[in-house]
Length: 211
Image (cartoon, rainbow, N blue to C red; front, side, top):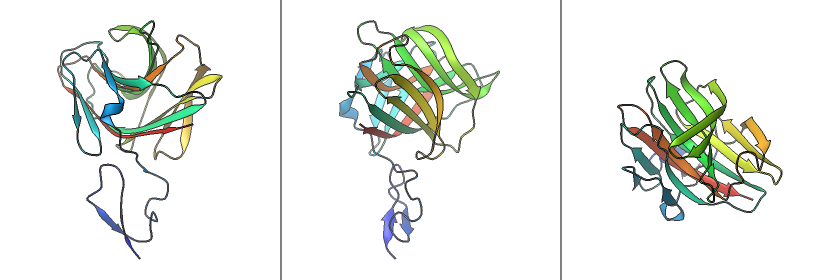
């Protein structure tokens, strides 16, 4: 038997047992690197490096304004998996998650966890004309979670695919569209939005790229 350490934001909690026996491939986090990303529409938002996670804070009273941290996409085919914590209230509106962005037009495709007074917690995929101009919701459904949200953005060379997961290992496909639908993205990243009197706190625990 040996002492192992759970990755992610739990590095100070030792677990006793054979290596990885407690978790297997689930909850296998890859800490994000702040220097890999740059801002779009920062406004009053801030990013705080918390060691193994990045805290994106979007102050209250900034309606329909996506504070974005983004980087260049990989060459397809590729997959990006993220894990994050995002506390919300059932008020209008909270929204945070992943984005694809087309730098030339400024248009954005997002998938994230939202919350409003009608639906409550929901998973929503949306199109944006810009960080401050909402276009349309492509898919929106009520959503439950174990407290950590897992999202996947995949470009297989033909389609863009958004998926979600309860453990970061087993995935459910949520939305599939042609890779040039609405935008042809050359950037990928994460965001926080807020349209309420409460601060929006998005804590990115993991950013894992594969191709």
